[in-house]
Amino acid sequence: MEVGSVLNFLEDKTILIVGATGFLAKIFLEKILRVQPNVKKLFLLLRASDAKSANYRLQNEIIAKDLFIVLKEKLGANFKSFISEKVTLVPGDISYEDLGLKDSILREEICNQTDVIVNLAATTNFDERYDIALGLNIFGVKHVMNFAKQCTKLKVVLHVSTAYVCGERGGLILEEPYNFGDSLNGVSGLDIDAERTIVCDKLDELREQGATEREIKIAMKNLGISRAKVYGWPNTYVFTKAVGEMLVEQLKGRLSVVIMRPTIVTSTLREPFPGWVEGVRTIDSLAVTYGKGKLTCFLGNINGVVDAVPADMVVNAMLVAMVAHANQPSDIIYHVGSSLRNPLTYLNLQDYGLKYFTAKPWINKDGTPVKVGRVTVLTDMDSFQRYMFIRYLLPLKVNSLI
Image 1 (cartoon, rainbow, N blue to C red):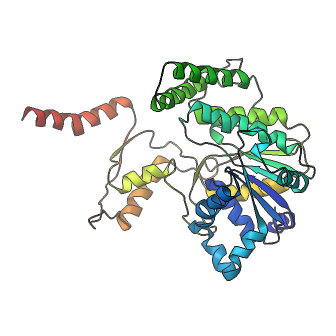
Image 2: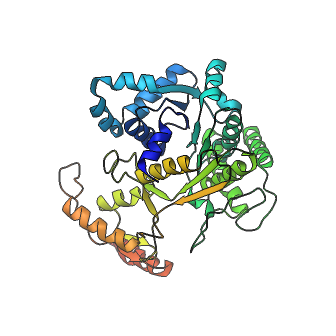
């Protein structure tokens, strides 16, 4: 698709971005404001109790990020007025019906003007509390889809999921939808209302027992993992995202809906500049730990593929899919990754890490550079246990004897 087609589509459009403080959401927002200043309006749904709280989040969690430096340089003194003109804050919470909107006038304005809804709201913690993951990743999707049906001008809904709803299968995985009754292990009976009842019953039980907040948190995390494994998913995150997709399929009716399933999302490749990332995310933790000299071995297949994709490429795919499938009701799912055409292996990571941190070593607090070596990759648990015994356990036993 030509760039001009995307820019033409975005011109004079109104877009509701749900979960606007998320990593991908910020890059998506910045991209639109930078490349198409003639977008009509961007509604940003932020979890906030009122307009003041929403504005605080906008200023501190979005606009203040280095991500917006290029746009600020481009607009200069006009940056603040441009943001005020194009961005409308929407305090709310997708855990509730009607997205938790309290302002009926603003709600009507959104329903009457919105051309596109982009749902990026989610909790992405693998072991999230089940009550939280259920509220955001499952019932949040239900509330977004029901709200979308009230938008009279709506052309397309873009729902961002994850490629790992497919579980731990290997090989070529097709972009197939999930419907209620589906599971990864063939177990039937999945019902979201029953899941909510399980959560409520467990919380009541814990409170009756006088459990502390910490004990409740641990119990909710364990419950999420156990419920995921009942139906074949490895963790709470991918399980609840898969169920969210089931709700999209069940509730979409005649809406034009696109589901995007990115793999491991890394820092930006080119836009608005290379290397922007927020926090230490998934694969980033390996790089940071290695750079600090704390990662000397790794258990895995040296030729195994790490499916990673730069965040700006994911955003570009979102924009193209949004434009291509506007006003076209159908089952559209895209996996956005690199493993098929440009695979990245653990061997590549090993080589790239050594090369990078040798040229640009991590500097300790005392000003000394950290010298890294090649990571030892162990292919099975036996070799891992031998390595740990020789390198760590044996010296400790010797020390204890001395």
